[in-house]
Image (cartoon, rainbow, N blue to C red; front, side, top):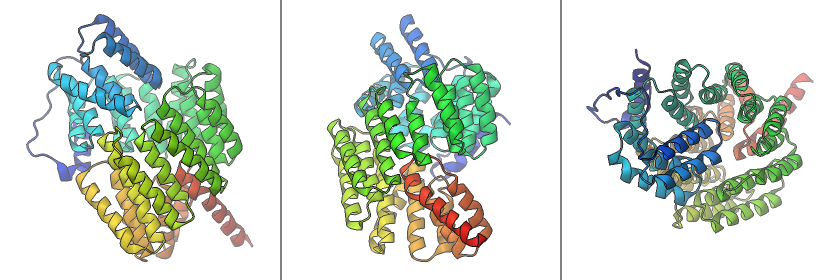
Amino acid sequence: MRWTAFLLMACATAFATDAKPHRPKPVAAKTATLPVTTSSPVARKEFEHAMVDLEALRRADALNDLRATVKRDPKFAQAQILISDLTHDPDEQVTARACAEQLAPHVTAGERLLIRWLSGVQENNYVVAIAAMNDLLAMYPQDHRTAFLAGRWLVHQRRYAQGVFVLERAVALYPDYPAALNELAYAYAFSGNFEKASALMERYVQLQPDQPNPYDSYGEILRAAGQYDAALDKYRMAIRVDPSFGSEFGVADTYAVMGREAEAREEYAKALMFVTGESDRVEYELQSALTWIRENNHKQVDKSLHEVAKHAHSVGLAKLEAEANRIMAMSAPDYKDAMHHLKAAEHALDEGHPISKSDREEERALVLKVSASRAAHNKSLDSAAKSVAQLESMAAQSRSQVIQLAYHSAMGAVLMEQGKYAEAIPHLQEDTESPESMHMLWLAYKEIGAQEDAKILAAHLAGMNEPTVEQALVVPQFRVLLADQQQQAAK
């Protein structure tokens, strides 16, 4: 069976409810790689340089190269859609996407598929997007770069099994392809296979010992595996290789999950010196604010996150403004205070700032998830049910992984509060990367007497080291609980 046929079937299963009948089979292209349509030889060279930067995980450099490319050739559709995909600036994203869509009739069939895929993702049209991605892979089965782009996207979507399959193919086509090795290592690590991830990272470092990202990525994977000191060593190596790469951010994240919050804040402040875009700056400030959650300093949490929300609002970043308010709602001790922040988050999304449909709807789903969870824990089950109903409707209309998981987590939270543990379990099992969902699942297993499942899950939950708000709210306290239980059992 051809590898593309396998992927088509795998993705069709995930999107079966929205499948269109009688879709024509994609035809392999006459060229081995995706064409690049431009009238300017100089723009073509600049585009290739941008792709090399992207493969080296130098996103800002890649964006600058792509911007130079479209200045040289404003009708460069492929460059426009990649700008839209890579930028964190909502205005630039909207403008570049519209330009790419307008230019699509004038480029090759493969490039039109690329535009349809990446535009569909931003417009919350995942069925069309996935179909276009599959057709693109089938059209260029020997193009390792196209496979890398698809595998990278699948990993970012948390579709790790499919990501592994596509990226393994990219590596088979080009065994010493650093970019694919990097993404493949992440896919294995996020699937829990740290042994394979580590072996791939060793190859990646050997191929590019003079580049910072192999060490930076290796550090992130080691942190996820709980090997903090080794992770810090890799991040510091990345800093030595290129002091301007920004690996202080990785050092900061590692200190944060280690519980060394003051040191984490110092490193976040250092990392901010290398940030040029406002969106990245707000994201770093948001990450730094999470350190106060781990220190249980609610007053400072509110103060820091209010500043982040204010900053995001002032530069028109609706998604990040909403996220800051959502995090305040998650960490607020008082239910009414939490609801106030959730309303502020909804207002930020509806205020009219430029934002892609996918970003808006996915952040809205996360806000509804928190609303349902907080209401359920407050025994306000009618309010919780309304939020779940909204999420269920959204999940029926969108194949977004974020929206799907938000619905399952919220449904699980409500069922848990109703004491319907057996019914909650399949919903919570869908969301295996969420510490909050995993904690509820652990409680559900214990309630129904599934002690072995609870034991296995406890080890998984205690080993979660992603520097997220849910990790900060759940995992440190859970580790203390497990340690106390082990001490009691030893007596």
